[in-house]
Structure formats: structure tokens, C-alpha cells
Image (tube, rainbow, N blue to C red; front, side):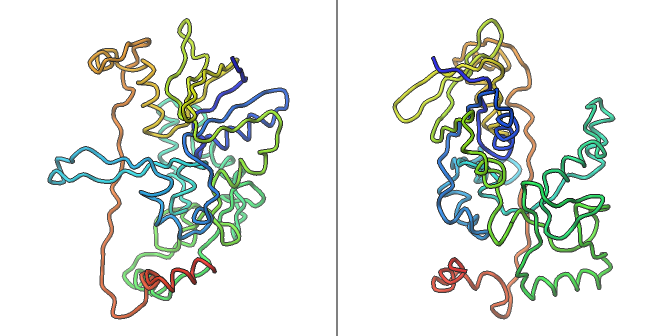
Length: 322
């Protein structure tokens, strides 16, 4: 049986960072498992490519159950299935949480999670194109920039908002979040900067790091109450890989609890009801997910002032070449 010190399940936004940091110690061996494939398709590098991938080449294709408060509608629920995870298919908007959220966690007992505690790590991660101050830094792995080609209609919107009394804010990740302005984006040199690009690709040659793509984890192997390995499938081949030190789940808000439940870790009564033998009764797993809807207003313009102009095939091709 093959063994590693650490097994990381999910090479997404967190998994790529963990693989980088853990494998920095040459005395440890690290296995990174990803159910999806590589990010070699040119669409991953194109900032506008995300529009083609939310239900396409890099998505699990999930949908919600009928939503009772939406008249029974079924909504698409995009979850990435690719190296880099959501950071490889998202809209690249770089926005930190509100400082009061972090301070609230610390006040509730999460020591080390106040905004003052996490801010140095935000700065350590950043390679910010424009800001270097109390809130930002340059030289980190993750490229952060401002949009390089905002449309005139976007600038008109910002001016109109200010005329309505909304203050201009050049930095939503600085001293305050209130106001109107351009988002910062995880783009460097006009290309998407995912965690796969920022953290994984520069260290793929480390001899103590092994990365398996198209490797679907099916079960956490538990012995004597301790997670000791992963049962995974690559094509028709099944393999159990052992972790000498830790199994780390970084498979996202759906993938991580799903794997726990399939492994018999979760509410015992629920597991029994669906034919899974409980091995550890852990209430709360797979429950209490809260998410937000993507709500936006649609208005018709009197001319070709928006990016909809690039829906035309010849313009889309030209934009892709750029």
C-alpha cells in the first residue's frame, strides 16, 4: 500500500495552497488528489473565459432541489471540478470578508481569527499591482490587480452613483467597504491567477509532492477512530492510499461533507436511513448550508455599450486572441 505523510483531498482554492506549504518541508511527502482534470484549456487563462465554464468543462453539473420560496424553481449550483477549484472558473473578484465578521468569530471563541490576526496573511498572499499600504502588499503568490479595460458605461455608472450620494471607494479591501468603485480581481498580466497558477504550478517539480488528477475520492479509511487513508478511483482502478500523519479535506462546501457522509461520519440516524453504516456519530455534517443568490438588474441599452457586443462570433474570436 502506498503511503504519504499528508493526503490532501481536493486541489481547489485551499488544497493548492496547502500542497505548497506542506511540501515546502522536504522531509515530508504530500499527495494531492483532484477529481477534476488539468487547467490546460486556454479558457482557464482568459479572464472572460469563466462565462463558458460555470456549467461546462470544469463543473460537476450540480443543481438544487426545487426551491419552495422560488415557486419550485431548480437552480444550477456551480461547483468546480478542475485543478484550482473555484479559483479556476470564478469571475476573479477579489473581496475579503468584512472586518467585523472576523472580529465576531474571535469574540465567539475562535482565537486567532480576528481581523488583526488574519490581515497579515492576506498581505502575505498578495502580489498587488497597485496598493502597498497597511492593507496590501506586493510580492506574494496571488496576483491582484484592477480591471485594465473598464468600459465607458462602467465609468458612467460610477459617476452616477456618486451624484446620488454614494461615496467613491477605490479599495473595497482597505479601511472600509462602503462605497462604489471597481472591484479588484485575481488577474496578473491579463491572465487569470488561480491558486493552481499561483501556488501549485511553481512547485510541481518538488520530488516530495505527488499530484493525481481525475482521482475521485470515494471513502475515508478509518481505523480505531482515526482517519488513516483515502480510497480513491482513477478510471477503473481503485486504490487505497495511506496517510502517516493527516488526511486533509479541502473539497469545498459540498464535496467535503459529502465524503464524510459517504465514509460513515455524520448524523448516525440519517446515515442509517440511507443505508450507510455509521462509524462516527457527528451531528451537523451535511446540514445548515447557507448560500446567496446571484441577483442583478437587467437594463436595455440604446447601443453597443456593454460586453454583450462580444457575443457576436467574430468579436468573440478577436477578444480571445487579445
